[in-house]
Length: 163
Image (cartoon, rainbow, N blue to C red):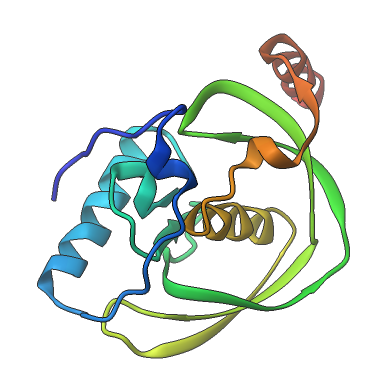
């Protein structure tokens, strides 16, 4: 397991549509482990393979709080519902934040690291993180969805008010 450098914007790989994973082997398992270590070291909650230079459909999400790490290989959104606007950031866009509208609910079909197909349903913040990472696999950046940019001081003020 290793911490890999995160690719930051601008970089063509971030807008590249990723290829489907066809081989489920030790190399894929190592990639997933490296992605997890990289995400944790970068204080992120999600990471997609293109963010570390791999143009394959692999993404992870970990909201912490005792929840299991979500590993999505070849994910497909099969159902969405509701809508909400929240502030998002991205490891590939350091110190850039903006309000983004996304579905409140998502159902996804994906494969795990062994290739087994599974279905996942998520709501609210978890759904947002999953959709953000799946967008990366299609070369879609959150900046293309920003309704309003939010500066860091505004975010810090909101956090202080909530405390």
